[in-house]
Length: 172
Image 1 (cartoon, one colour):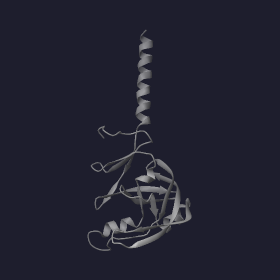
Image 2 (image 1 turned 90 degrees about the vertical axis):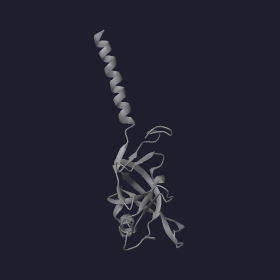
Image 3 (image 1 turned 45 degrees about the vertical axis):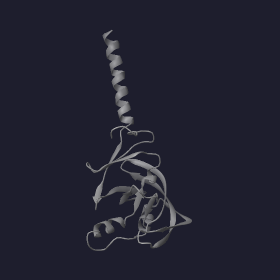
Image 4 (image 1 turned 135 degrees about the horizontal axis):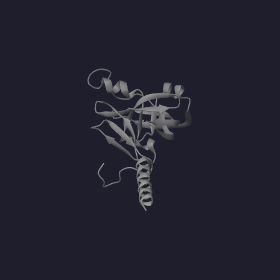
């Protein structure tokens, strides 16, 4: 009888541990420049500190040198036109970045565009941000169906598997 009870507890404990591991997030450290989050993103054979644009609609935006160094980015024939905050219009080539990894999370193919430097200032309070943004950016669409949670106090981004993580109405 004692063995059966202990065996049941062991199975219950193992189930709890497996559930905990299954829902554990990949916690990625963030760097903040002018209060904007940046994370190390690996694209093929290269890694860059990309701005995480939680309000953007670009997928991933990477400069030509990163595209060359990565060895896993396909340039497409299509282009995208966009207007920056100052009204300047840009037209850039679309791309698909393969082997995109944030922390330990492989995002798979991510659609995006060739990065162009727009806006910012080479000197003054925005100079550091302008320089950092040269490496590119990615938005929440790049994570696909994976929920993400920013923790500004701890300086981290938690990336969950699809269907996992905190749900609406639950404390984070």
